[in-house]
Length: 420
Image 1 (cartoon, rainbow, N blue to C red):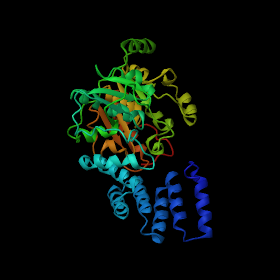
Image 2: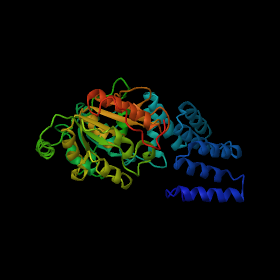
Image 3: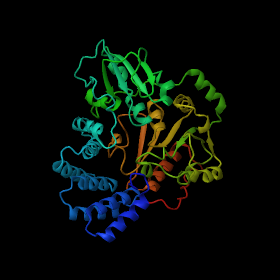
């Protein structure tokens, strides 16, 4: 229960107490492994889950948990094998099937991966199955002349990424209603003529004939890495772009570079995807105008940001994603970790440098510096878990090459506490 509440250090203490009373209690070892994983101690978590499996080798959830720890460690082939073992023992284990689907998608096995991805609707954190009793559009049904409701799920970035399919469905003759989160409503209204855009999570007024969650659209359209449709044609209102241009003032000859180094703290993978501002600060020289494009600054970053002095924080003026898009339209480059603002920059066609952890989200594939989802993006990947220093070294070299860091040729001071 402590683990479910996010109180992982207390959960670890409770698991250790249980094991002191009953050293062979497999469930306590499993809980201990989950707590260790949640606090970033993957090697210890692997030892704990192996201890649990020594007492309960037929436990499908334990094999699934072991697969998750192996993925944290970047051991993807072993993670896949552990998921296979879990599913062989319990074919209906939805969490294992969802997580195996993400490994398939990460590996580029999209035909099978999209099918397995449907198991997310039955997992412990279900998404997408908002109207299970209503007729669904799966790609097989003729949508011509029918009102098809496409509804958002999960995060802002997912909505931005997958709303590109709405115009494709409209081109097949469907009357498309697209539901987005309220902060995306004003921006999504620019998507395409004839597409009705509504905010919130409720059924649209007037009902619908068919529905499809946004993240099931790649399956419905049979998307492969070689057939990804182009990003949605989104744009902020021109008057809003003009207002942000005025706010930024005239150009001074330096490139304008937007920065987002951390995302939503409650994100399940935030520990891996975000980095402290102090790690990025040495790269930010006077040869560029640095603009913070994330809305919130974490308390741990506030002092370092103030001390640095070269980054303009405009996040408090970003009321919604239309504001963010209007600001991004004034920039020459965006450097970002894996957040919604990165998806927005890629959708707008801006040069995007995306900083990725060793175990990236499934959509970024593996072993490549580009992505079929956003042609304007360049991917900078960790070589080892937690290895942000190597990523930032490559970013520094790339900035120097394009004149965005000063003095040229000088290696940035490496902050303490960064590995790799």
